[in-house]
Amino acid sequence: MSLRLFNTLTKTKDEFAPIDAKNVRMYVCGPTVYDFAHIGNARPAIVFDVLFRLLRHEYGAEHVTYVRNITDVDDKINERALRDFPGLPLNEAIRNVTEKTEKQYHADVGELGCLRPTVEPRATEFVLPRADGKADMVSLIAQLIARGHAYEAGGEVLFDTQSMPDYGRLSGRKLDEQQAGARVDVDAHKKHPHDFVLWKQSASNEPGWESPWGRGRPGWHIECSAMSAAYLGETFDIHGGGLDLIFPHHENEIAQSRCAHGTSVMANVWMHNGFLQVEGQKMSKSLGNFFTIRDLLAKEHPEVLRLQMLLTHYRQPIDWTDSARKQARAILNHWYQFTDGHYPLEPSSGELKPVFDALSDDLNTPAAIGLFTQTLSPMALKAAANFLGLLRSDLNAWRRWAPAGQTVDEDEIESRIKARNAAKAAKNFAESDRIRDDLLAKGIVLKDGPQGTTWELKK
Ligand code: AMP
Ligand code: ZN
Image (cartoon, rainbow, N blue to C red):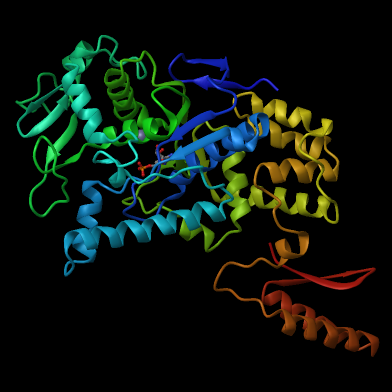
């Protein structure tokens, strides 16, 4: 298998060559934990989960390190803590918000079939120098000042963008172009409008840490520079996130890391997933088309949501529609029937090669999935689907799945089926039809076959 990945840095699809095949290293920007994750946030979780699975397959599970951080320091978190826990001391209120949201996030993406990353560091644990000597934000900022890439002004420490000759390479923005037309806050204390905050002072009602620049808190970008260095080193293989993070977040991560460490690259490959829209419109709270993962899981089988996500290539925008959801449901329904009673093949089987070839072509999941029912045997299909985190259940469980809260009393159904069989045996067809229609009205479909009568939920 030769893996080719589209690299935002080079704008080309390049052959992937890890720095160390014994330790392939990937970092993905994780959630800011103040509210339920929405289905857009699930996209990077699922996309990079597929890449994680593919890398583990190729290099061995123990030779891949996947780091996805938890952003647990952010002004949105403070606001939420003050709103939801007004009576508590701020730190405690913040902890309540972040722990609850983090748990929720893990439950949500776990249901969507995402493996846990190797490490999920929390930003607040990487602010100050650490006993274990791993990289931290305060030391990185001190290093940037010492090397002439950062300065103190107006109560902040700022990154000096003009000190880096190729600042803007990832996003293709040049500093002077930005200065001309851009509508960016020009704070008087900044040397250049694009200089960004590494450290800012905290008021007494804001979370803060004692630092050489007073009691304060880090800017957003520096946390990823610290946590990626802590677990993956100064230069690593792959860095991912959504398209919206290219500028300024990833641009600034690169600037900080390269300038602090004096390296020419932070990560070799930069990957970005496209955005998720709803019925052709931007997903937003004000338009009322905003779905949390939790909302959707209450109504739909998690594998349907995961398949729906993977039916579009990760770099394309995805339109999240009801008809696409139904299409994904129909495909899964077909797969469950087709593979019923079959054991999956080993993923190394030759029959799966075309599937892995498609996945290795910049994670072409729609092409890979297209091969499933066209060319694969039931055993191969099951293996390929399992590999993508699908078909994790069996036909019976799939048929009986019902949205949470809508309970199906299986014993009751079985006893109605018995009563119907008795009516049929007595040639009382009016009664047997009545029982069938009655169940149908409750969303339960009876199927008469050679093995007797089975039931499933109406799709
Ligand atoms: P945030 O918590 O907003 O920083 O977002 C977490 C991750 O979700 C980032 O990688 C974002 O790029 C990504 N993301 C946010 N909204 C969407 C969306 N509508 N479609 C796809 N990815 C998104
Ligand atoms: Zn980041």
